[in-house]
Image 1 (cartoon, helix red, strand yellow):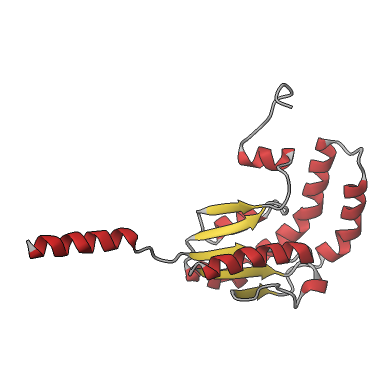
Image 2 (cartoon, one colour):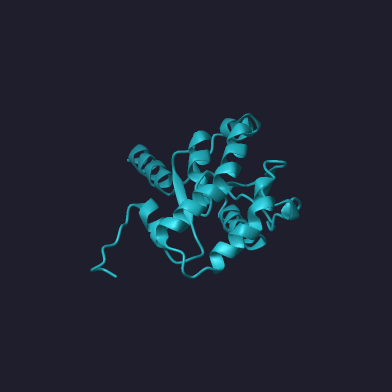
Length: 184
């Protein structure tokens, strides 16, 4: 009876013991608010006893020393690209144009982000430590269409999309949720 009770106690304890996950919060430095949002997610996960790393590839030179994190580990990849700083003004102009159509916006997004994505992909060898760390999960924002490919190249196959915005058509499409005109 005592052995049976001991086995039951061990099984019960194993049901309630959960290992912490190794979580990467992937956050290119595209704006201060974006980095702050990512840092908040990373700090919350850190507080929940997960092994969390906020990884910031440097896109904006103005944010080279900003991370917004209070508790979590922060890893940076400096000197990734100069394309973001060079193209930022053109992005603001497109965002202010309320008459731009979906296809024009999609084409612009590809043109805007492609050079940064190529620059980051060329430096994949500098991210080997991320692969070696063996992350279980990655959180990323869908602003830069390259993010999901970079996460996959780091051998992280479980992902969570984070967002601070309404689900726009482009993001809904990425998630596989297309809407018909009747639903709108």
